[in-house]
Image 1 (tube, rainbow, N blue to C red):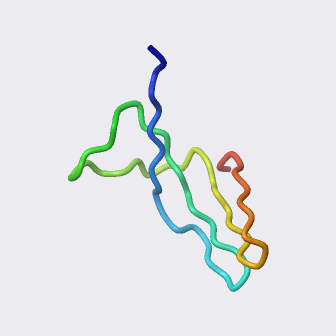
Image 2 (image 1 turned 30 degrees about the vertical axis):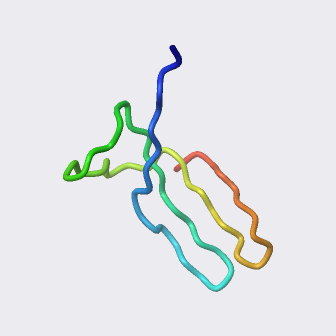
Amino acid sequence: MRPTITLRSRTLDDVTEDLVAIGLAALPDPWRLGVSFSPRADLVATLGVRHGTWRITPAE
């Protein structure tokens, strides 16, 4: 059986007319309602609004 990694949106990091950046945190267990998100982001997903393209990069 393959391990499961849950990615949850942590925050909207940056929003402009052209870009939306969302911080993502990897969780070792499925997230449950009432459980706080991690304050750190592992990845950043950035949406290029004009072209509808996503880029996922490691968080700094």
